[in-house]
Image 1 (cartoon, rainbow, N blue to C red):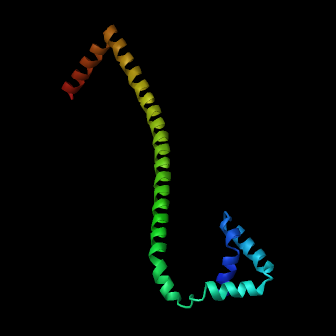
Image 2: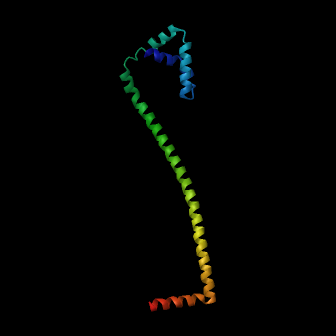
Image 3: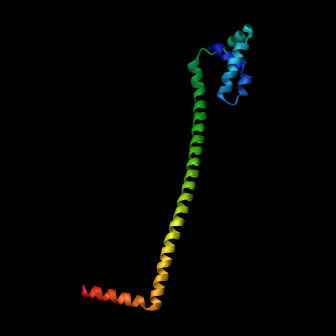
Amino acid sequence: FQVALAIFKLCEENIMMCEDMGQAIHILRDCETSLFDADALLECATVQFATVGDVSRMREELLPGVRKEYQEYRRRMDNYKLNENVKKGKELLKNVGGKAWELGQGIGGVLGSISQEMKAKKESGELLKEVQGKIKDVSAG
């Protein structure tokens, strides 16, 4: 375990410049084959990581920070998902609004033509005759 940490430590500078996991793996493979200085590797493993034996203690020390980072990550992801859902909702409303406008125009057009037809019948006296005929029908029935 200490040797693995020493490999990471010796390759740390290159690993920190990576932008994704694929690059990091590639660098580790290259670094692993280029480590010819066994003395430097063992010195790093035994001197810098001599107290690594107590992994459970280290885990307890680092766990709060890891949890905090994870909570921050979840918060950012939730915000991202929320923002994406808001965008989708706005787009959906925009599309529905357009359809509603078209429907309103259609209904308005129908009502407008009915209104014009009624106005024409009123002016010609046909509307009064139609209403009187309906009243007679209802009275007779």
